[in-house]
Amino acid sequence: MPLVAENSPLLAVKGLEVAYGSRTVVHGVDLEIRRGEKVALVGQSGSGKSTLVAALLDLLPGAGRVTAGTVLLDDVLLLGEGADPAQVAAARGPRIGLVPQDPATNLSPTMRVGDQVADALRYGTKDRGGLRGGARRRRVVELFDEAGIPDPARRSRQYPHEFSGGMRQRVLIARALAREPELLVADEPTSALDVTVQRRILDHLQGLVDARGTALLLVTHDLGIAADRADRIVVMLDGRVVEDGDPDQVLRDPRHEYTRRLIDSAPSVTAAKAISARVEVTGMPGAPGDDAPRPDVVTVRDVVKEFAVRGSRTKVRAVDGVSFTVPRGTTTALVGESGSGKTTISRILLGLETATSGTALVNDTDLSTCTRRERRAVRRTVQPVFQDPYGSLDPTHTVHRLVDEPLRVLGVGDRLSRRRRVAELLDQVALPTDVLHRRPGELSGGQRQRVAIARALAPEPALLVCDEAVSALDVLVQDQVLALLADLQQQLGVSYLFITHDLAVVRQIADNVVVLRHGSVAESGSVDDVFLSPQSDYTRELLGAIPGAAFLR
Image (cartoon, rainbow, N blue to C red):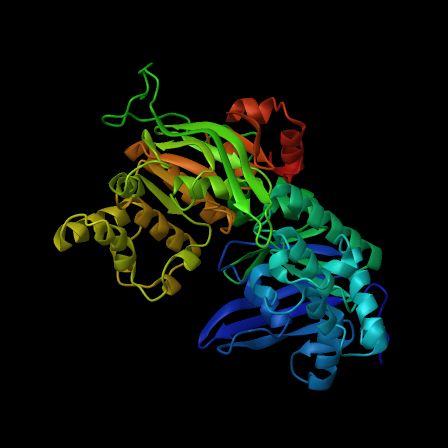
């Protein structure tokens, strides 16, 4: 084996090009990562981040292929002319670990989590984790303990559905580190987690890689995470590296216009609300200059929701005496950790759950006592916008059919009037008419979310329940969708119940905020009051966990 210079990079990518069919999507990328170095790879959707990582890991889909360039891992040629398949297989598996984005789809629901980590220990040399029998089981428990999973021996025998999102992510980290790789690739490892869980996961991941001297390639659309966690930031645009430097240089003195756009689009927790003034909406009480109080679209008063535990007489109280209102034409944000009750409250307002006690009113209609006819009217009044537009849009339907569907289901208008309404809705969400006959798979993530918003607006609701509606989007697309929601609120007077784990987004879009913890209200008030003068220790903890404070506030 040839000797490797002490200062040589662990990973050296030179002139890498990747194509799908005849279309080149990664153009001559050069990238180096040294031992123990933490590098963040950032850029908008379609910038080439995921394709670059897939090429490094030999995970390109069938149509994708590397057309030029080389990738060297230490002394082993992984990609390029002369690469030895046996050497590549022996190096890539044991020496590179992967923490994928979504633990819900990257853990088998039918296997115990310990068995899934044990699979990574079955093969390879002993020094790379190729353990057998009892030694493998003991190592799984050690890995769970190192990943911060409590009671690791017992939890290793459980299934993924018995874990929270944060704990499932820790399982993926344990699996990725099982064979003690020299390079760990983490692809959006915390994008679906709330800020406090996100911080704990990233703290733990950073502690593990630092203790082992493992190099880290962190793929993220969150500039705050890149600022806090990386030694270097590499910015990609259209399959090319456009900026490469330390966080202080890249974020404080960016050289490329695209990097400046990314920074300007990143939400700031100290910036004023994006909707700084309301334009007058016909028939909308509370327009500028009108001192009359706005009527409440939603009134939640002392709501309790309990769930029975299967096979037991005990009950779990998911919501415990929550009260708040949503005035017409305003945005109220619900924030809090996973399990705080946010989603349960939204399901009650959408008519998908019934409160155990208390009152939930939508336009003065009590959801727990309303008639079938009244409930049908409420369904027109309240519409959801979900986190994943691809998952919430039928992939076999055209955009026209998707947006038209709620009108057909609710019996609104005839075919001609519905066609005009669909065209009007697409115009409102700034989508061209040529998308009418496309399907979700032919659209970008931002376009799909605009379709989801158009569909939600179709029956002219008074309230949109936005459940993590921008959390899966990169900062540029997120900024565009937030601006769209602000414009629609000004034009239509629609109210938003905005459920999110991103407090910087709350600062940008919300008028009022309700902080939930363990099903109860920890704090509520105007966004300025809660962000600038938090009264609860828990709220201060949430605000303190926001990444990138030194660079992006």
